[in-house]
Structures are given as structure tokens and as C-alpha cells.
Length: 334
Image 1 (cartoon, rainbow, N blue to C red):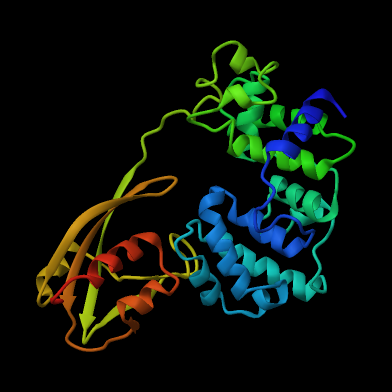
Image 2 (tube, rainbow, N blue to C red; image 1 turned 90 degrees about the vertical axis):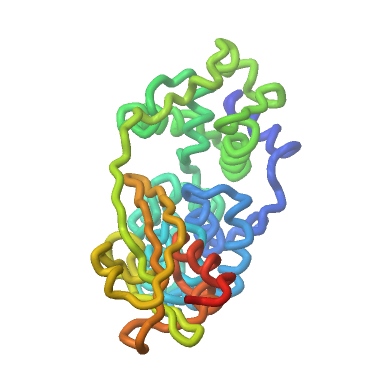
């Protein structure tokens, strides 16, 4: 075992995380669920979602046989809904073509929807003790600081350097403990904003720490102004019910329930109109200003009609959830 991995393994045994709900098992399904949820989402946020999700879908067969809307409802509020859609697709593929069993090799795992190279490696490590390298955002930050790797980690050339380093550092033994140590260090001591270098097992060799560049590395994404878009949501209400529409199967909020979008000119044709304060929702590639118009519906037209409470329990994106929370406390409704 090299010095880098030995230090991490020893540190993880003493100071790492050992009681996360998906730890202590080599069940590929539960590990897969946790790893997908942890993509772009912190552990503290994931934990309650993981517990509820596993209660509703305890195995890959139950997930595969469930309706997508039930899966999206369980995921509602966690964001990045393509992860849930890909999980549902993957579950069906595994049940239909792999007899409900996950492949034990990272290259085969990476072929499934939503499972990239790093996630596939993590599943293979924790479920099958396969010797494979991970490189998620936290690990990139650790490598950038410890080895003084310049450049934005999202650039392919920088990422290639890090993948090479990740492969070189793999220990011959205790691969699971080592992999968990990398995750724990990046999520804890080597955090983005307030790293705790004083307790880091790698501080003596960390280039960023030695040279006083901890807050400079990794280099940030090159600044690029996000384009802005604008829309108006129509919240139609009648007899305590609100009208929703199912979004198309592709694009923003695919398959989720949402309020209909209208043109500003259409507002003058509505009855008993009330407006809520506009707000902005940030996506990865653009910012969306959302105007909200509440109106009394003349009848029950097409769409899905639900109470605010039923809507909150359904598959809805976060901006819709925010609006529903406001609408629920309005008294009287328009």
C-alpha cells in the first residue's frame, strides 16, 4: 500500500463515516441507489430521501415494476430528475436482461443509463470489492489541492490528469476503505469553502496547504454569464382544487406535473386574478424568472386536478412546490 492510501485508510478507520444508512452492506441495489442520489447532492440532503425511497422501492424488482410517476414523486424535491428517470430505466433493464442482478465490473455498470465512470467504480468497489478508481467532485478537489493540479477540473485535459492519478494511487488491498476515505475526506475536512487542514492526514504533503493556496485550488469554472429566460405559470383553482399538466417526456422537468405556462397577454382574459411575487430559479445553463398568476377557473377542464396537499405529495419540480406552499396558506383563495 502506498503512503497516500495508507494514510487515508488509517484516518478513515479512526475518523471516517461508518454509520451511513447504505454502509455495512454489499447489496448492489442499495449502493447503486445511494450513489445515484449522491451525484451533485450532499449526504445530509440525501439521507432522508434514501430512507423513504428504499421503503417504497426495497429492491430492483419493485423499482422496475413501479410506475415512473411513483418514482418521480418519491424523488420530488431532490432535484436533477433525470437521475430518477434513468434509475427507473436501469432497473427495468437489469430485471429484463440481467435476471435482476447487477454486473460486477465497472465497465459493464457504466453502460447503464445514469451510471458514469466514477459511479460505476464506486458500485463495483462497495458491492463487489472490485479494484477501481473513483473521481467525483470531492475527489477532484482533494487531488487538486494535494498534488497542486492546476486548471478547472471540469476541463477534459485536467480531468484526464486526475484520472491517471486516481488509477496510480489505487492500493492493492482495502479498496473499499480507501474509496470511502477519499469520499469522507472530500466531503468533510477538504470541503470547498472551509477546509479543516489542521486535522487532515495529508497536510504534510499537500501542495495547496504548504504553499498557502487552499482557497485557490481547485480553480473555479471560468465565469460565463448565464442567459435568462422568463415564463408565467397559471395556477387555476376551483372548489379547492388546482389544475396541473404533465410535462413532455423530454426537456426541462420532463414527465413532472407542473402548472400550465401562459403568455402575459393572456392574463387579461382570466377571472378573479391575483399575482404572487415573481422569483428566479437557476438551472445549470440558464436562469428562469417565474411569474405566478392565480385565477378562478370557470370549470374543470383537461389536466390533473388536485388539492395543494395532493400536489405536494406528487412528482413536481421545486419551483412548483414553492408556489404550492404559498397557495396553501392563502385565505381566502381568489
